[in-house]
Length: 311
Image (cartoon, rainbow, N blue to C red; front, side):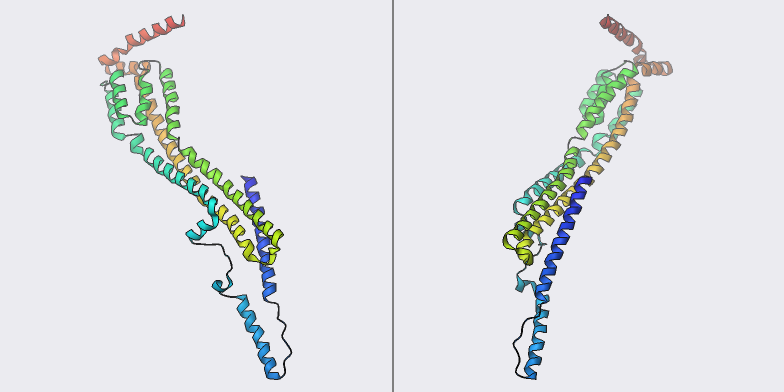
């Protein structure tokens, strides 16, 4: 990005020098005193002396409608007509930015990613031994939220060692986080590409302006240069105008994703401990429920299966 900033500073210096030279040339032409014919008497001399002053005043600040000078347009219709095909990438990028922003704001709602009522009920029933592996997976699949999908990865390792259950939660969490960040990356892409498009338009506009100067000796005629200079400035302005909101929204959505991931990680580790072998053994010692006590023979059976598979 430092290289891009250096290019933008160079372009700004070139534009400043070019516009300053054009204004100096115009001012020199408009302020030059006209040649008056010799007068016959003193009254006529006074009249002809006053006339150039009024003419010079009119020339310095003429109405815009009378001069026909081409300025950088400020209304939307004139800007679109001047830029032509250069408006296409900015319109496309703006539509994509608005669409993905609204879509991610809906998808990343806290109540949709981590439904509070479902999580509270699920953890309470799991701690009270009201859920087994099959009923827990069925409840999570019915809910369908990202945090419920994370719980499924832990339930699939029911009564396994805690390290194995936690690894399953970590692997499943990476997949879910990838889905949450799917369209957020598009906003980052827009924030990077659009300033480059604006810089390209600026370079092309400057090339056109210098070509007009070389072809028509237009250094003293701002009308022939104004269109290309306007395109050079407007393309950069539009590029930054699209990139800045896209970057701002990208940073905001990344922060929201990180906040949701931290909460999901905490809940996932709670469920992983509750369904793990160590968690069920501790729960059976403190509560002595039949469901928890049944974890020991199941764990012993799973250990024998692992030993057989290893042999």
